[in-house]
Image (cartoon, rainbow, N blue to C red; front, top):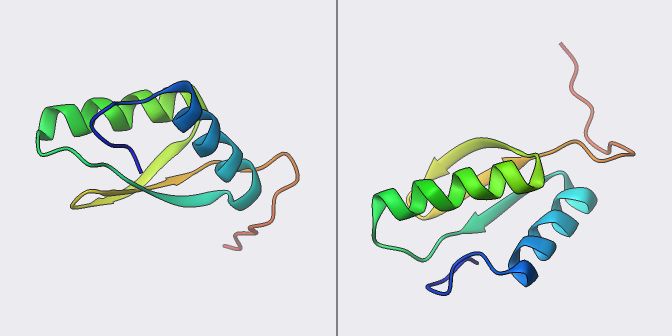
Length: 75
């Protein structure tokens, strides 16, 4: 969860670690300001090299393939 204190190094490290382990994660953004929420999402994606899959309300779904991928997509 990203709260009013913004994106601290601790939060970014936790997101990065979760992406490496799970590949697909949800992050809750506690902000009422739309522009601030979009800025948080952009910063998270840039710093973690992840892709925003979906945003619903205050929840953003992120994806980044792990070094040893667990998710396999078939076409």
